[in-house]
Image (cartoon, rainbow, N blue to C red; front, side, top):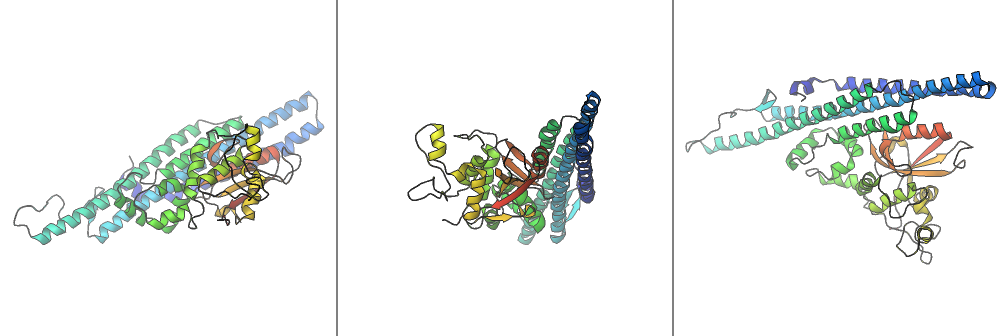
Length: 431
């Protein structure tokens, strides 16, 4: 259990600095792996084809794999440290707010609890003046508010400390890993999930609405913004926040409920769709948009089969017929979905401005890969943006939940060459 004084005195900035150092280390490791492959293994494969050359190339590839895996593991360490740093920062801000309120109310903090003039000596009896009774009641309410904030801040800090300690201890044992798939798809993904769990654990779920409002009021505007981008679904379900917070989370124009869109993506990332397409990524994104309330756009005569349509309708027939008659091309093809959204009010957003409910599209830039050069071939939903700016996505084909966009792009680039990322914010203009 994190104590009052531990939290009050902790140096959050040092954890942030440590996270930045681990990110830098990860980048150096990834760069070294790329250099070994480009400057070592590739020339060997091209100019030294005998058994000795193949043996040397195999050894270089093994070293590159271990360096790349090390980069993913250290990136995971950075994610955990970032989650710890921001969770502790928010918890500490809540604690400081409790102290500020104590000073405002004329109370003091003793042994981690609020203390006032009537503490331990409740005025009783028929001769106690009414003004004394009123003062005691008011002080008791203030003490309850302050103690509630203190308890909440320590709960937040303790959950983050425990989750970070367990994950860092686990990562510390995963050294010299040669399996890049394990490092990237298991170890780093788990660290990303732990980071998100720590951030989510910083929200007072199930607490009294008055405490929730006091907690929210104590955060800085930047901290509120960070929380809204990190976990909009949990915040939207919280009782006690100002109404305008929910409106901003869901979308001020009322066209798409971004919270319900993200909720769908987080809940269905590993669930089968009613009709599964060969490449199911755009179908998954369209289903998320539909869950958020985006209305279909059909042609008067052509229904979903027109050139500028989006949506699906029920119908009879086998899966092949359904895919072609009852679903628009923009529903199930990434390039057509991107084109439709931009043609009908959507806007491209820099990655630095991404927020949950935006759509990510991958474009194949390098030639000679599995996808045609210049093709937009993949789509995903932004489901979280951590306070350090890491965009998290959820998707189908392959199925992932809240994984780092930068990390996924790194793997796609390594496997298929240069990628270009487009982030589109839908703004339906047909209703």
